[in-house]
Image (cartoon, rainbow, N blue to C red; front, top):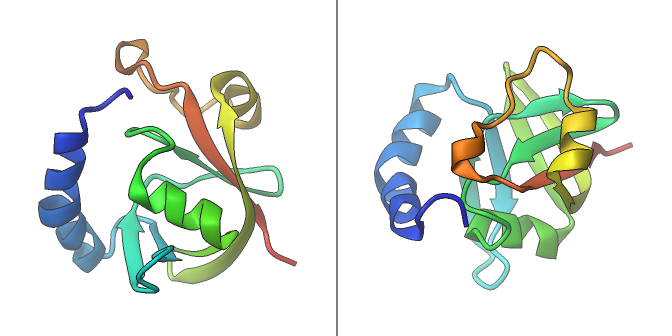
Length: 123
């Protein structure tokens, strides 16, 4: 896991609510896999051919990732639009880097990020 999980807990409780309220970040809306609660997670959303790619800074074990994989879909709110996403899957960095446009910066090697979430646009 690239980033320590304790930082994720701080992020979830302190920074994420402010980022969602600020309205400047793309927000992924998903449903809790056991609670059924609706969650809003601010993330970098990178458009790729046919969908979006998300960097898994905390790895594929993060709650939001597990929620989306269990549900099979999510909604992305970006630039005033709501985009339905489906078919979530964890992909490796080789596949992710091929999908990302050249002008998008790759995560620093120091972070050792090897997992990404890719989702397709819903029809």
